[in-house]
Image (cartoon, rainbow, N blue to C red; front, side, top):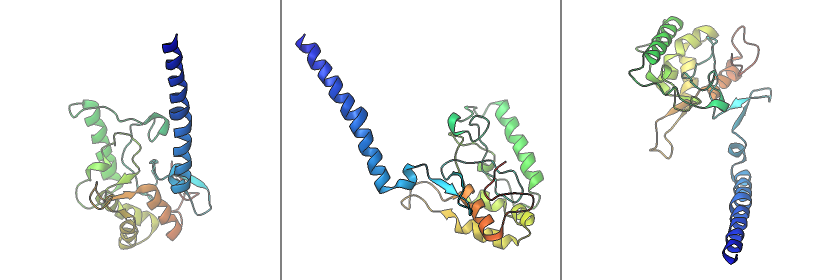
Length: 202
């Protein structure tokens, strides 16, 4: 009986310490030290409306917006169904999907320089990666510039302003957040024709 009592006490103490006090302490510290990140890194447009999260990609199909990498999460970019396709390099389904994306990208970007960057046809493991390589963003500049009636150099300068360096200077690779880039384009030049609001995905 004494052993059962000790076991129950340990269970209750562990439950209170690790199931209640520790989570509350970490939540409180996060709210004090970095509240923006703790609350989901939400992004607002020029009108102050929340249009997404800097951590989760969205679909942008209008020619005046930069497009993110493909997604296999749910119906695409579904934060409630984060996942990769789990298709290997020998998968015919994967090869067919990539071939279709290549044809679409070539059709939509006839003036794009050079071959299509890999990350424009490969999905991330989570299906939610909001970033592109600088090369993948710059590859889309001619299309975006033409759709917005701007010089390619102007759009390229906006891309360059959004290149995020390696974490701590040596981890990972430089990246561009597609949502933040598209919102900045709308803030600088206004939304392209036939798009009702900044940051709209479709």
